Length: 212
Image 1 (cartoon, rainbow, N blue to C red):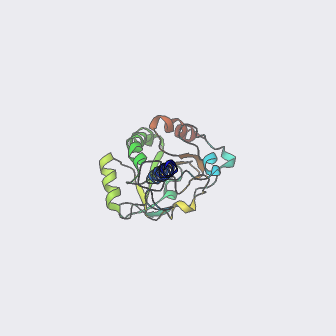
Image 2 (image 1 turned 90 degrees about the vertical axis):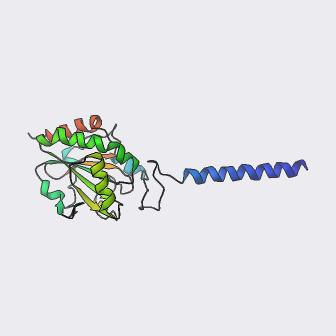
Image 3 (image 1 turned 180 degrees about the horizontal axis):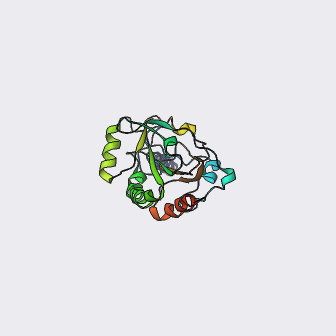
């Protein structure tokens, strides 16, 4: 009888452990529902290489000019259906932010990015978004309205635009992410995860002051 009770307790403990593992897998690190790789809700941190190249907002550094890679010729339609391209901003510093309306950290950083835009736009800095995994533009446009975003965003529902970027600098499964592109169109800084204005502004300002 004692052995029978011990077996039952063992099975119960194993069941509780499986439930805990399943619950941990139900949400990503940003609190959004988990999805298949590359699907809605996915927010994997990527490989060790990705993490070492793309720092968090607290650790991100400016990439030395000689080591910078040209950003791809990212182009498409914005959330209003108009043609938009990263290349059209050559000569400006571009803060390129990858976001989705479904992403909790994106909601947390949205107001910070709009404050950054207002403070740095007069100094030749352009904010540009890439909206990912929103199948239609409706939720994304509602997000812009809710958070008062006044910078344009490319609509990239399948994440195809992200695949053109070096994966060590922009992990397509890490949302939100931010790149800073210098005036020559080169990637000068890479940040994985949410940002605040206080964290990002010194980095962007340093890049904006290059050669000025």
